[in-house]
Image 1 (cartoon, rainbow, N blue to C red):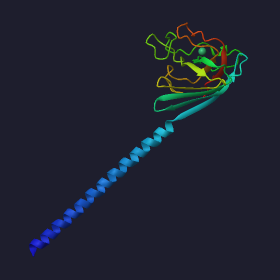
Image 2 (image 1 turned 90 degrees about the vertical axis):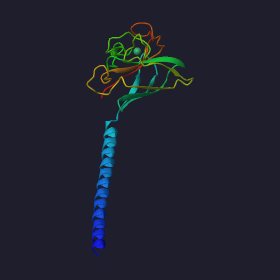
Image 3 (image 1 turned 30 degrees about the horizontal axis):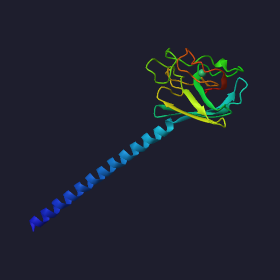
Length: 196
Ligand SMILES: [Cu+2]
């Protein structure tokens, strides 16, 4: 009889211990899920999007929208343009957000915070932080330009990365990636300031 009682007691203790363990594990799992959810929310909060209208310059009809989105340390640019002549054109980030002049030259030269030569993006010889490059407009004069880089930010403290306060310029001509300091891309046909 005593053996039975002892066994029953031992089983009870074991059961209550197991129960505590399960509860502990369940709590740990809940905490993990909550922490992961918090992290995801924080990441979602960090996504920043700014959008601008491009205005025609140099008597062109080139307009459109340019959007910059920062997410996970990367800035993505999408420019949707109309009114272009068919073929290749250059697009750059220039030094100032000032589109007041009729020829777009109020934006200054290329944004070049690292003081490097002009060139094709990623070139070993160097390239400006604004050297996005060339794109092609279709027969109707439309183009979509997509570009993404970890070398830009929207409003961070790093002046070599912060695109805010700069300007977007679309050129009539093509960037040859060699002429200094501009790539000889010709007239500035569309402009916007990047203002947060
Ligand atoms: Cu340019």
